[in-house]
Length: 469
Image (cartoon, rainbow, N blue to C red):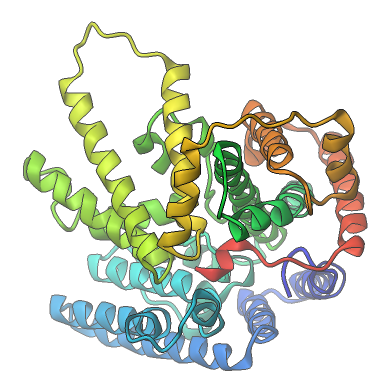
């Protein structure tokens, strides 16, 4: 059951929301609302795999007990033990099959991976560290359990801090429900996922499935196509998560801030997957010393942090190399900022072109099932043979049928560029929804939900890309 499925939109969400509103009107205690959402979240997660729910419950119980014990005696060693235990759970499921050859390919690795484990483990680690630092406190079990398992952000984030969500749960139901804001964000997120990302998906998959003999257009289309698909898919999920949270009076953090407008790789990581970037900054980079111990140590900390970021995304050498290359680019940018002459002008458009080109090219490594596949695709950049331009009908056809299945590489590239350019010229979904009036929100919501509903009936459900992480 995914957000862009009929089961979720027409059955699960209406039942959960109407039940929540009924309890909100008849009950004065927030605990009943917490228990209602907690039960709904467990049902939502169990619809994927019951055994995964057992693991989630065990992680919640163990960490709640550890937080209670840690509240009695504040010990750094105890905190380290808790964090190591949580990382060990993640490692057992995500990395041991790869390291010891228990799974021969990426599909087998993903099949054995409990959904959302990377996100809720990191969320719990952040809670334990914040509890040790005194910036958050231990709450009753049912609130802690909902903090970990709240269904809008359980599977793919955003990674929420306890100091942000737990106080909201204490007063759940006492704040006004911004219904139009929540529904408009939900509809925009659905449109990004169903109308844009899922339309590009077949064409992008075909480009990565047939890397042999690729030319420059094929490789660039694979890079830009996947970069656009991933952004629409993941930012669409983030918009939906925030919108769903608002429907229950809960404010979740934003996870994207127009990342493809970045003027550097450093700026990109200040805009992309914000809650993950903040996690690595606050709980890895700064504790390692950050930028306080000289340029050499800073470079080491940056590279180590980005290597860990790459490994977090998946078990495979391609993720490690992807993270390492981002780390090296961040280091080089830091050196350039220190050495660049003050008088040297800086073109914003050239900086954006530099950033976007590198980011898109590195997505090839991120998306490829193996390093060898990415190497074959990168080698296609040297083949500059000409390609025939598509006709207007070639571009209209995949838009009309909402699928790039069997579309040539040049069509995937042009459609991706059109989507990317349009999104970059528009404000983010959050900013637009805040500025729009109720009539604008209502009209956009109605139109987008009708379009999404029609598209959903015409093709099978496609999981969100970040479910695999």
